Length: 415
Image 1 (cartoon, rainbow, N blue to C red):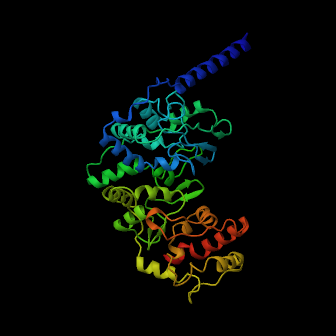
Image 2: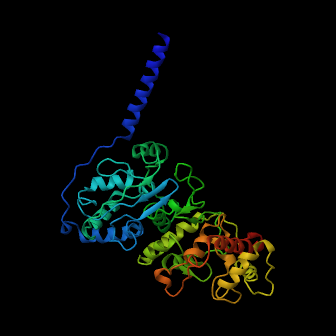
Image 3: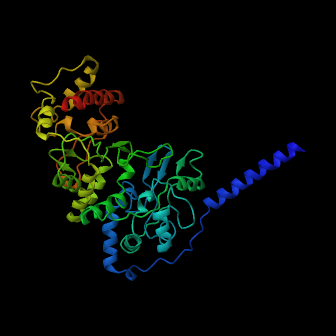
């Protein structure tokens, strides 16, 4: 009798847990609508939506290489598997043409599609919660009236169990999704507040530049460095890795053109961000710079000229350059043969010791640059780095990266 009661108690607990989970995970389907007529949207709202979508870099994620704009199917690799971005063109069957503004808002802020399915947080709705409803509606207007409808079905995600079970995302959201909108700070300037709104919201900068926990949620310290598509996204806070102090004008130039002679060139996932900002209003980019520079409050001050002078002495071929330790000889030989035509004393490139990627705690970005090269951002045409992935083995790339980080990436030589 006692065993029977225990069994029923276990069943009751499991049933209650299942009911609670079902209540947590269930989201209603929002009825489909007929695709709104493009002419029904105010032209000024559509144009604002285009600008805002550009700040959100929507096309970069929702357009596969060589594919139609906004039709999705760009593979995004995550620690849990590969996710393909969705079709956000106004096609009624495979895109969002049958979505109402209510359905679009819910997807942007709660990560739930029109049919009630939970979206993976590779789509940064944990940042988009900070975007105002009128701005989300403007993006909706742009997608519905300013983008061609494309019929393209999204590939299913390739995720291992249990990450393939979408309803479990309801638990993730209960634990980690901050639904609070961003509040203006009256003690700050209007430009700072505008920059905060763009950086924290549509720009979703923290999605790459903040660390994540084992469940894939952004964690502290905010803007303390993270990972994006196999690249290391450096800290933007007071622990920034840059060896040269940034001025406001330098940061705006870098954000809009992807290059500055004191800091180097953007690469990897940062390149499409820069290409998007290249088209934007300079006043807004100055606001972004104001906010990003404020994130670095408390950063250790540096003597720019002294740091640069020390970095130049590390360059290949400089008379005061240190000897190559024997354990890095293989990488140094490849570097001498492949890299010193550009990366040498007196060369036109930014000294390697000043490159953030070289000073990063992991070699990811250095290895990716060696293997993939750097294609020039839109504002820096004519500047690039060739890819060596087809010419060097993985072991050789590792050897070069190890040498570069040992020779140029030690902060001790620049303090």
